[in-house]
Image 1 (tube, rainbow, N blue to C red):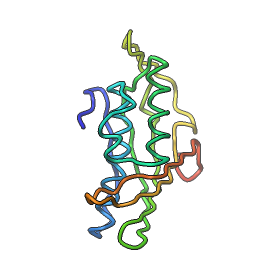
Image 2 (image 1 turned 180 degrees about the horizontal axis):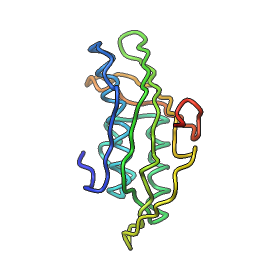
Image 3 (image 1 turned 45 degrees about the vertical axis):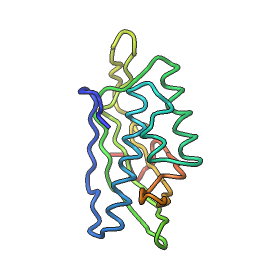
Length: 156
């Protein structure tokens, strides 16, 4: 997934030191990037979304992408993902929570390319809680995704 030149994502501390946990964390990050990619491509049905997400997470992400695209928007800027926490249950289920710093990410008008640089607030920080299930191909797909803006764990 190649993001536009004006969009950057960084993942800080996304290595647990355990092969299974690292694989799940990597795919959780890719699932997040798949959403960004779908938004920047203007495609709620993007193949990457369907590859890294399924079930309720996929349906919710597709709705989220569609809403942004229908509003004539895309993204510009940098999002930093940090403070990941992972719990693996059995061979094929994991829970991953992490924070996102969107203080340097902005809405961009698709037609005019004008970037709306609004000041950061507590709402610029998001706590994500996800559930992942390893599919038959070995991909840790995000199956459930919840987010909370302004969560005190993430506000910096």
